[in-house]
Length: 67
Image (cartoon, rainbow, N blue to C red):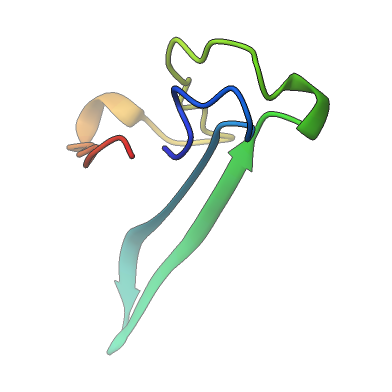
């Protein structure tokens, strides 16, 4: 998460994930999101993880750092 305590720039988050291997090829993706520019002064109290399918309870989720 970036710009969490900023009153000049909106808060945003970026990340990547690995889901599985198909043969020798890893599968995964990249995520990004954040406040729209006019909301730069809002307080960010956290974020939600939502999946379209699958079970988030069966895997480990690691969150590294807040910048």
